[in-house]
Image (cartoon, rainbow, N blue to C red; front, side):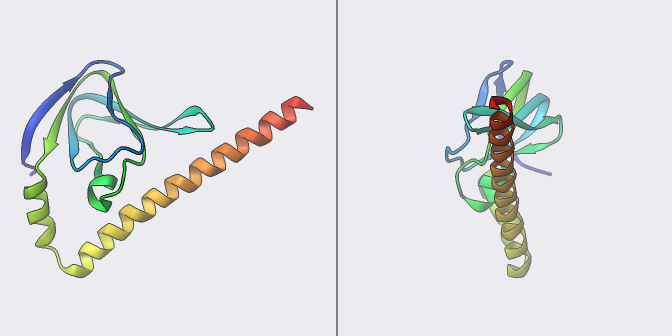
Length: 133
C-alpha cells in the first residue's frame, strides 16, 4: 500500500499539473477523476480519463523528466500524494535489473506518447490541407 503524505482537493477543471513542468511526486486518485491531455499543434488532445484508484504522474516520477501531459480535475477531485521516500525505499528493494526494466518502460511510454502526438499532428495537417483544396 502507498504511503500518502498529504491529500489535495481540486475543483472541476482545475489544473493539477501542466505538460513540460517538473514534478517529483505522483498521486493516487482518491475521489473524482482526472483528464490527461497533451497540446498538439495548439489543440488539446485528450489521452485518457482516469478514475478513483488510478495513479497519475508516474512517468515523470520514475523517469525524473518533465511531465509528459497535463492533468485536469474532472469534477471535485481528491488526490493523495505518494511519499517519495517510501516509494524510493520500495523501489530500491528491487533488483537493479528490474529497476532498469521499469525505468525503460517509463521512458518508452513517454516516447510512444510523443510519437502518437506527432502522428496526430501530421494527420491534422493532412486533413487541413485536404479541406483547403
